[in-house]
Image (cartoon, rainbow, N blue to C red; front, side):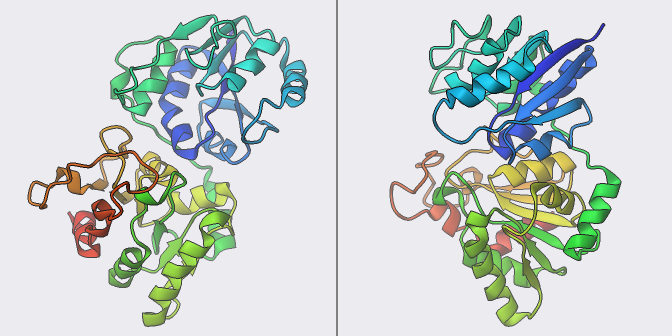
Amino acid sequence: MATNSLVVAPQWIGDAVMTEPLMRRLAARGERLTVGALPWVAPVYRAMPQVAEVIDFPFQHGGLQWAARRAMAAQLKGRFDAAYVLPNSLKSALLPFLARIPRRVGYLGESRIGLLNERLRNPPRDVRPPMVAFYSALSGESNVDVDVPHLAMNPQQVQEALAALHLQRGAYAVFAPGAEYGPAKRWPASHFAGLGLRLDVPVVLLGSGKEAALCEEIASAVNAQRPGWAQNLAGKTTLAQALSAISATKLVVSNDSGLMHVAAAFGVAQAAIFGSSSPLHTPPLNDRAAVVWLKQDPAYQPPLDCAPCFQRECPLGHTRCLVDVTPERVLAGLAA
């Protein structure tokens, strides 16, 4: 008889993608997986064939939301044999505890000792292991550092999304210029525009509603010189439509962001531009990915001793780790 397992998902798209190898390991040993995820992350898990069911959690950012968690726990009580709590927060571990799920697995953090009964120690604060291995270790299995995430969309769903967005498979490039964490991870808009003008296919800009103005700035700059060459879809698609568009694109250019990991998991050609963060910690796990990070370029002078700083904004005020990445450099990476 299969083990019924609940997976409490992380709240960021990139992290969700990097949990796919864990889903694959659990499903391979006979666990039936139900993922509980926030609505803006849930579509990622619907692109994982190993996941049998996805529940949209009715929670918001911040606060325990005690009443909502108790109500959801009451609905889930008696359904599951095990729970895997992927975020490190106290509130994420409350639901499996309140639902009285017998086996509750997760990392130590935020006073969760009483809520989890199988606990892994977090890495030291000065150590940043690859996130895929960090999540896969919750399986209790070894050799987790070899895992590579994969996503797969339903072909009919992709076809319907492309038709709705007026896109033709393989005949456009996707730019994802946002980065939720902060400006120290964002390649300048003028550089995105400069690259768009050099490509041999039109550009589609994807992102959240918060990134619509940024994407419009890029699209306007491109269209001023090549009318109709750039289309701003930021805030105009569902996440499922955005995933479909990425799965069918010719190439993706992005910062270190959630959509970078989505592109990698679909195996499409991509350029991933890093600034304040590190590709040693959150790389695009894709043989077709070109990683652009000036920190790794010995010819770049003066050396970027400040990188990676992992700050939201450049503490030195220049952000040259991104400003000095030219469109020509990114184009060369894509052509390699």
